[in-house]
Image (cartoon, rainbow, N blue to C red; front, top):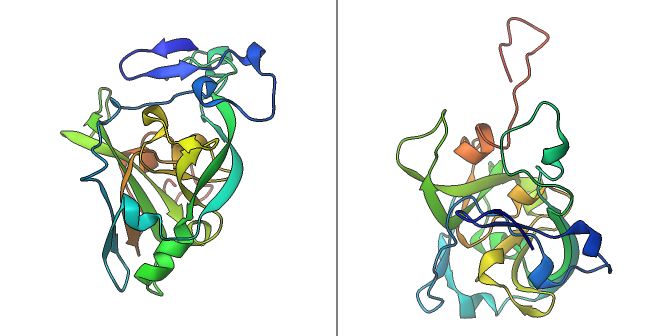
Length: 228
């Protein structure tokens, strides 16, 4: 693997070694925004809260009671091939190998949300990881933040998997142990790793990794509508 950063860990697959449809776990690229969290599976729980009828918590064993699903999906960093941009753009300087394809095993996010009872006004589902830290570059929030992204409720209720296995093996620590989201058809930042909390919201999520990083601004055609 090509080391792009050591702290936090960011590893790239040498793209020239690609020789099959499925990327082996040890050659699947690693993208971290903060240090990999150390999680005790005996104490870990997944919390479901927000615009739902029944706030819930699940242990790892309790999640195993849901029907298991298999999904083969590609995950690619939104910054893949960034090194080739002119002028140079900030961020991890990936070449071609920040992409991988794996068979993921887990449960549908929709199955969990249905058990919790999503309210009719629900608009988005926020996925929050256990990884956290302070943002180095301005504009930045004060103190530490968790990596979190949101999905529209329709996508969350469609084909999103909460995976605990990768290519038939337990999810490795660098890929989100014990549980990560896999969001087919979306860039990798949506597939939040080290899941610890799911929040159903009736408002648009305004988290750092939703509105500052992994976001862009464009000017509206109408001067009366401001910026989007």
